[in-house]
Image (cartoon, rainbow, N blue to C red; front, side):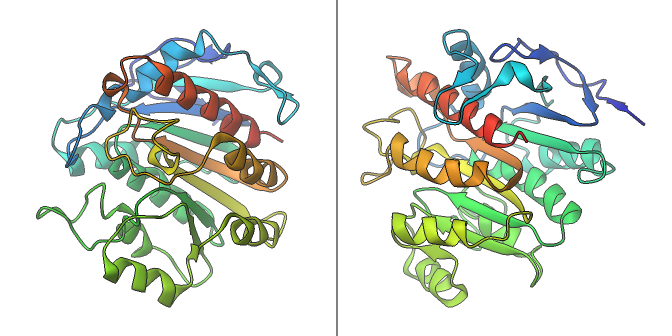
Length: 294
C-alpha cells in the first residue's frame, strides 16, 4: 500500500513550504501534532505548541545554511493534529499507536516528526520506533531526567516518560541522554548505573560520532534542553541549558548518521508573550526535519 489514510486526522496548515496531507506515504516524512498536556505539573500550555510552531513557520525560510539543505527538495507532509482526549493520557496515546502500529517504517521509508504537547506524548512514537528498529538508539535531549517510576500518582507522566520507554528497550537498543541538569538522586544513580548520561558537550559529540553510520537513531527533544534565556516558553524551565549553536554541533553529526524519527515537545507558547520561543522552536524543527532527510 502506497498511501495510508488517516481519516480522523485534522488537516492543518502548510508547514515551512511543504504540502498538507491527511495520509501517510512511502518515502516521505510526516509531521503530526499532538496537542496534549494532561499530565503537566507546573506551567500548562504545551497543547498549543504544534499550532504555534506552524504559525511561526510562515516567517522562516525553507533553506538551512547550517546543513545546506532545503525543505522544498524533499517530500514532507503535514498530517495535522491527532485527536486527543484531554487529561486522558492512555486513550490519547492508544489512538496514536492504533493508527500507526501497522506501519512498516523501515521497509517503506516512512519517517515521523511528532510535535508536542508535553513530553508524555513521546511514548507512542518511541514505542512505534522501538518495535520497527531492533537496534534503535534514542537520543534524549532535556533538562530533566524523566526517569521517575511515576509522578503525582501517574505512571505515564511527563516526568516518567523515559523510564516507561526504558521498560520497552532491549539489550540491542541504546539510550543516550544529554543536557540533564535536574532530577532525583535516584534518577542520576540510574543514569550512572546504565551509562546513559553524557555529562559534557565533548562527551556527547564523541558518543554520537562513535555510533555506526547506518544505525537508526530517534531524537526526543524537550525544548527545556535549551537555556530559558533562549527558550522561556516552556512548562518547566531550568537554568544552565544549552544554546542553539551547540545544539547544531550535535545535529550536524546526526545529519551524517541515520536519523529515522524525532519528536519536539514542551513548547508552551502563551508563557512567552514575545512569541520568540515559538520562532526558536520552529527553527529547531526545520533543522531536525532536514537532518532526517537523505
